[in-house]
Image (cartoon, rainbow, N blue to C red; front, side, top):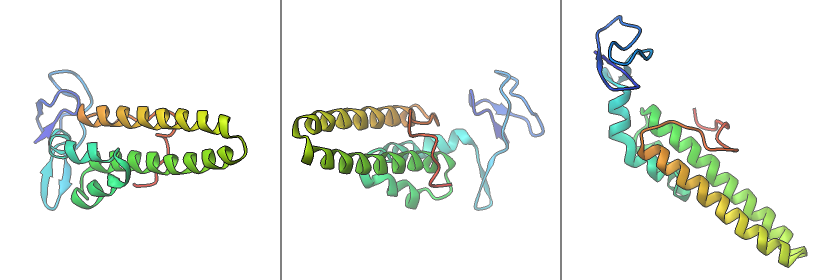
Length: 143
């Protein structure tokens, strides 16, 4: 049995569009011989997806929910955010060594930027959405 990714309604096999909302229907995701709908995937792995945006905890969904498309999407977003955080703080540290006042201001700007992206990612995961983060979300390191 397939489920609508948009509204969660049951859709008979072979149907290409949801009868409830008209959205295109995806095939169920195979999970060790059993089938799991995208709605089930999201509901089971929301908590793990939220952890993805808290520093190195992006590793948790990679090991705990290996087969979850939803968790892997958010783990990728969390990894990209983590790498961006490290790169920006190294760059700001170098600038701060030469220009302390400008470096200090940049440090606060980077902190706010990373915090806003993390909050956006957490909200998207909590809402069950697979939205890319602004500016950095288009990069795929985990497939």
